[in-house]
Image (cartoon, rainbow, N blue to C red; front, side):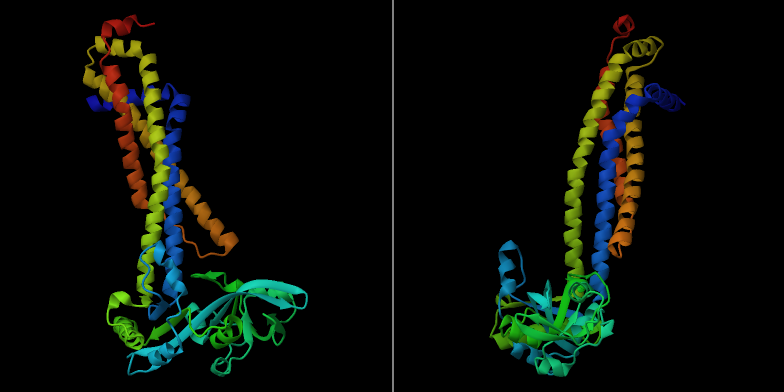
Length: 412
């Protein structure tokens, strides 16, 4: 009953100064709102990226040049020329890689396309049908180029929807020729609007046979990446080991630490993306949490002002028999109530803004962005808000409890 009376007294004290109480909790509301919003956006971004990566297929294996990057100093290795045609041919042999379904090398070149008086800069991807099947994107107009086109290094391209619109407008592009580095390429297909799939913006992309891009646009004899598709998800680890053994033998490598290539599966990519997004989200949350400290200091200041204003009330309660513990409990409860109310409002506001953000991404940017409410962050936010109330309310509450009842009653 005593605790209930103390709670009622604390609530009456807050109601007596509504405006001041509202301004006091504002810092907590902003801090919790920022945390919930950042967490919701972070979880939504993580879900979007992971769904796209998983959509590439759990059987897909990626081989890239250079050893596995372990830090910023290793980034330069992605430009090495360790993956060549002999590697592709060796990986295609069932004797070398068991359970290997398809092998598809890939190169990328940023180039300027022109048609009559129109020009467009785009990423020209040298790929194959396997590359497009992995991305699950196929021409809406025209058709895919063939294996014969790859063998013959045919100058043919498939345009993304934005590239096609910028060069040809509403007119038909199939059969017409665009120039890339003064070489005429015949348009055989146009992709439907698709947006970004993993790291590729399909709408702004141009696909050509990898052999054509390699010879006519880049003048190189190596690949930027080799994609391998296993026959089933269960044998992916075995296929990875076969790939490593085959490439090490071809490259004369006996020490795995000296590999001039690295192999990654979709499971590896999912794990890396999860770690990266979690770290970035934690960093942003840490920055947003600073406002909670500021809010806590604001609560302490306001509570000190409240103690001074209510000196007579404190003296009267002590004269009627209230102990120092009673006074301290009342003011601590007021501080905790303020922070919990601010935390609750911040959770509601942050969740609402997170939902609006996800809705905006879906509606206006065409992204498959899901709203993910961070329940764990909401519970943690309430806990942190209550703790801040206790920590920053402790000093004002102690100051109130130690006031002399006689001097408090004399206070004007």
